[in-house]
Image (tube, rainbow, N blue to C red; front, side, top):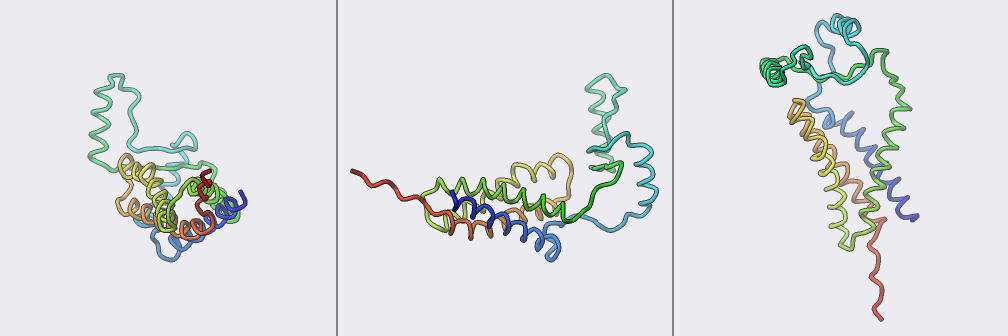
Length: 193
């Protein structure tokens, strides 16, 4: 059990540090993101404050609830989606607590929990060191295909953002796997009587 905990903390720390390197130094984790100020941002923020009813996640264009014919509503909505512009908005009406210590602590905690799951998977494997590293790296691939790909497919996130997320996950978890596979070793098969 101690090895699982050590591997979880080590793996979580490696993924956390990789996240910093990926986002802040190499810009892999932020590929396809535009962090520069939008022209007219003051007016956009004012419009959001005045017209968005509550904090939440919004897709623009939204469905027109006044159209009761479902087929007509979907056709009308698809025409607006196809003609653009389209936006995926996270709106926090009262701002967002950007306390870096809190955010980094939460990120480290979630990385460590994910590394605990990877440690549990490693504990059940009886294969070579490289095999175990590949399994942890493939968990990053699994994570991206199970969630990150959907952001590109369904919400129109830029392909570059999707690729950055894929690289971020696979590289981060492969790096974690290099250390975790050395800590969580295969159990010896019980000797046959």
